[in-house]
Length: 81
Image 1 (cartoon, rainbow, N blue to C red):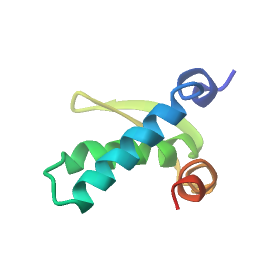
Image 2 (image 1 turned 45 degrees about the vertical axis):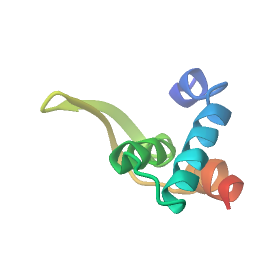
Image 3 (image 1 turned 30 degrees about the horizontal axis):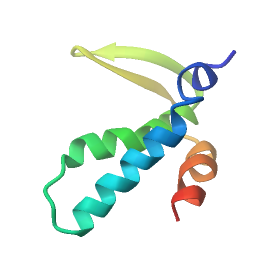
């Protein structure tokens, strides 16, 4: 079973709702944590990386690999727009 299936399945709708809520708040001139929003959106890009491997550098966890925006476009962009 793929990482994305194990971790994101079941949480995707909650993540999308939280992202949409933060964007709405920002558009209404409320103060939001833009770094957290950027990180949440980047999950969709990271999950689409080809040949991805988990990495840890300077105490932070991230995915390395070749960027592929198919997952981002299918699972985030088309649903959000």
